[in-house]
Length: 230
Image (cartoon, rainbow, N blue to C red):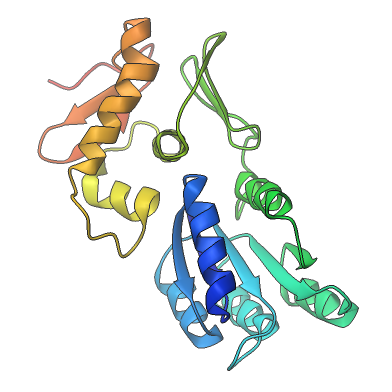
């Protein structure tokens, strides 16, 4: 799950980035409106957190330009507590929700989860592949009736796999969407986390739903309907 934060105040941007990253999100940050528009039109995000007050064009104009460019990532606008006019303008420009400053970070997380679940188009509230079920809002995973505990990053990786069932996903694509656009660490981290997931969602249940696609990457399959690759 990948989020764009558009916030010009360095301290606030860093708090949002670190807090969201700790919850397992891949986070990119733009420090002004122009960069925010560019990133959001060039890349795909599951949600955008956008401050109204920016040094060049304001958040309302950023939102307007994105919607005119047919970029429909769910957008949470951050406004001043007493600025009703900003809230109205933001919603009218195409924002999906707003949150007044100062805010509790737990509330921001809840709103982001809600927006991601809603998506640019209506999505099922719970993702299912075979008897594997993932609820983004409740942050829970079940194999049948058994609850599986995952770390935030494991959850984010499984969430992306379940959003693209049966698709062969490259390591580069997984890095981009589960870690972040500018990730420059060891790309083998994908293989490591795939191993962690297999240890939790497959091996204890004698399943092989996460399949290695040689020379490509990985895919999540429904064992009841998909035959494994040769």
